[in-house]
Amino acid sequence: VQLQASGGGLVQAEGSLRLSCAASGRILRIDSMGWYRQAPGKQRELVATIPFDANYAGSVNGRFTTSRENANNTVYLQMNNLKLEDTGVYFCAAVMFVGDSAVAYQFWGQGTEVTVFG
Image 1 (cartoon, rainbow, N blue to C red):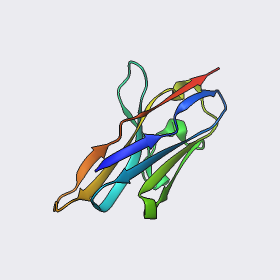
Image 2: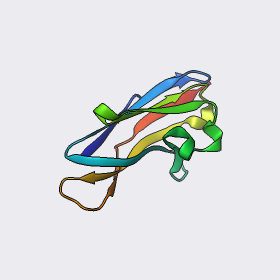
Image 3: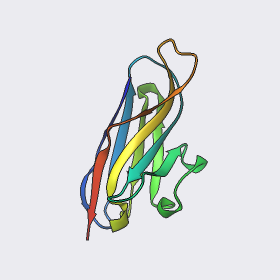
Image 4: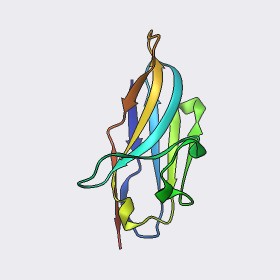
């Protein structure tokens, strides 16, 4: 079971990026998915969960939105009006029942880097 994040890159301030995260493997059920980020020298923080209004960082409200394709176990993070402080490595995470497990586990993707320049 793995989470594969992609879509990061270099973008000018006020620009947009769309991140994707695909879960694959023997997945029985996905209870929740979310996006986190870690800026240089800072701790990892929650950006948003899917659905978006469940839990999110106030700093991204009105600029970031999340969506999900259940058929493909994929979630997206649409980031608009990017700011310098959005720079960091973005990770996706999921709480999933996998294989024959009767309990859910949290999985992390490898991270995708977002650099906003101005």
